[in-house]
Length: 167
Length: 424
Image 1 (cartoon, rainbow over the protein chains, first blue to last red):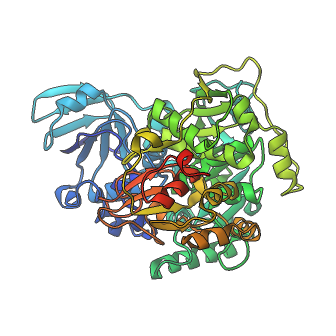
Image 2 (cartoon, rainbow over the protein chains, first blue to last red):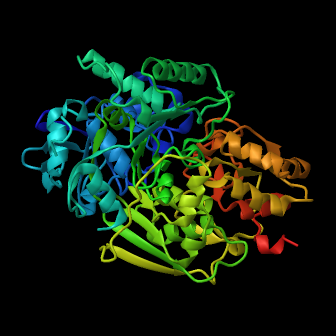
Image 3 (tube, each protein chain N blue to C red):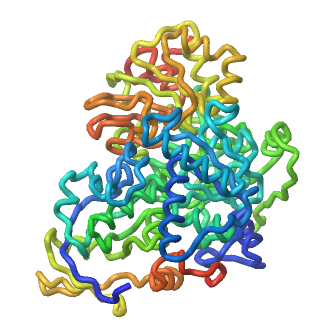
């Protein structure tokens, strides 16, 4: 995992973006990761996959990823190129899936920080300093540090490389 | 310690646990179905490419599998997923695989209790968010994704952050026409769809004590809609009697301490409880049937782990007996055994004479998969658990969530109806 991430923002300024809009039910039978990416965020913005470049970020409101346990959700988003999601809070299974599968980073930021970031802004995230730099607006924000275990799993690149009992 | 803390302490070999502690807990049972199963198998194939091969499962006897989402096979892709799943269970010696058209099968959460697959005091995880349902048995039950279930299949344990417990005390006298569904919808409306994020929701009080096992399961089922890690009810004689009818398996129940600490305590008085409905597009968007009276509907759906257990069907049948439905009405019992019991009790005849279609057990249209998905602009009243945009079909369709009594009453009039106005 790179300690510094850089990319462009795709902002969806609403709370409770649920797994049914991230990847609608009919696609649950698909397990090909590339195919899933074509339908990422289909319930909210069908053009989403075309807009995203490798390494970009998604910024959204509270309780991102609420709803089902479908791992298709972080898979589809990460396959479009999204490397991190910035939100004030995440639904628990989405958060686990994102981290344990090593797909992308769920980064918690203040609600006021969400307001300051605009669609298309260029951000640089320094994970070692828990610092976000908005290169477009020349501003700096803080992110909530990962809890100890989460940081270790992120460092390991996912739960697969993590021994049980090492919490 | 609370019951949740004590179960996790026992499973992680700790004397004492507090909310916020992170533990690796030993898992007693793990479940996957025809959506999460192939997802888990895909994780194994990815791991294998990176040099980590699944030689054997930690304990095949603690794993159980069901086919419920896209069954009977909805199309060729679903059929291939079911074959993939069957090959996997055969290869790794998982004997408890409930297959459609081969005796008992049904929705995973319903089988978890109907078949006594999970017992009080156990740690149970499943590849489905509504795994919380089974917490009504006095179990720690939580939903996980594919990677986590794969990890459990390999190692027999998984990490948890010990949740704070929100304690819901439900007291008073439950009025007629009120079901557990009304109670849990009311609670979600009050605390919000992220009101219990990362937390446990525990239910108690004289009303909960008086509820049957199936009704208790409706409460815990929808804790997922408030973001809860788990929902739980202390096991009692109702739990033990329900299990005695279904299994000889031994188990050691866990009870919370009398001085357990809860993060919040909520008290609900039932006496003035109204038939409650979640409007589109959130389970937290709550109103009462009276206020929505007259809303035009296209369809009524009685199905899912939430609203097609035997008692749900009995309550719906009481309303539909001798009446005709005015809108398309679908009834899909949650498991083969429940379908059979409903048939023997005459409920299926009541539904069909009313004009409803009765389908095989499946998650079906609850998750917009198949068997009655909604078209653009269609409005449905449903006994299911979610009504996000596009949940049951087209992104511009609408779903109202309600109890089986309210759904049946609305089917009769074709409009949202307070059941107190329909029943003779």
